[in-house]
Length: 124
Image (cartoon, rainbow, N blue to C red):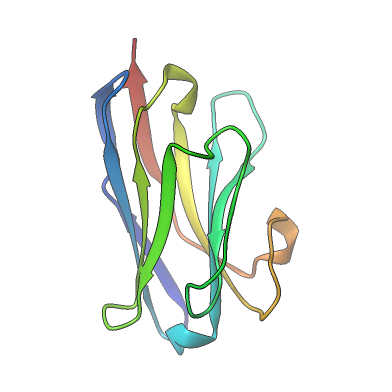
């Protein structure tokens, strides 16, 4: 059974940084296309970033491009989301997601596996 466990969320001031971690287990990590999504209060969950199976290709939403960096460590079966220059509008629950895919995936409904989420709060 695939498990995705997020960690690293917390409270940070605007302009600060956080690094989210998603640990995957129960499946061959190299088969997984990994993504991050977020859901702010009162809003639908939306795409943040994604990374290909071997990490050579990444996707970002326009709202985080240049500030967030997604990466993966195959030895640790872990995906990271480095978030810099955080803004209050980045406040949300952040979810890790995975799907067995070779092609870029950015739509929520395309992902098969989900973590429970980790709260990120950015104060102004």
